[in-house]
Figure (cartoon, rainbow, N blue to C red):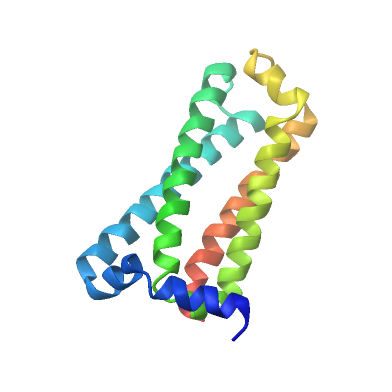
Amino acid sequence: MAPLSEWLATLAATPLARALVGSSTLYLLVNAAHVMGIGLLFGSVIALDLRLIGWARTLPIAPAAVYLSRLAAAGLALAVVTGLCLFSVRPMEYAGNPAFLAKLALVGLGLANILAVHASAGWRAVRSGREPGIALRLGATLSILIWGGAIVAGRWIGFL
């Protein structure tokens, strides 16, 4: 058995995975928390990205950027933790699912975009109250597309 296959089999045998398999109520609650995390993440991201693109200019950009990026981080944390729990139920199936792999790739791209944006001078300018430049607006547009794609890929998992 390959090392990845061994790790996936071990993950499927964990007490948490077995508890999720054995309790439809626990699985339901973790799944609902995953959906809430995704909603919080995407809702915050799209609100922030639309403001960066230029919508809702009456909303002060500095406090919105700080608040919405913190909400998005909380949503991301909840989605990742609950997603790992859900993955543990059928890790070998998910690891071979093209939609799941596409979702992981898109989440990785989304995270890379976040890191690039937050490391930029444009983000520091926005946090000090200045309007975003073209690079930050392009990053925000890309963010909407990436995170929206991750949601579509996530929904696609169950259909393959």
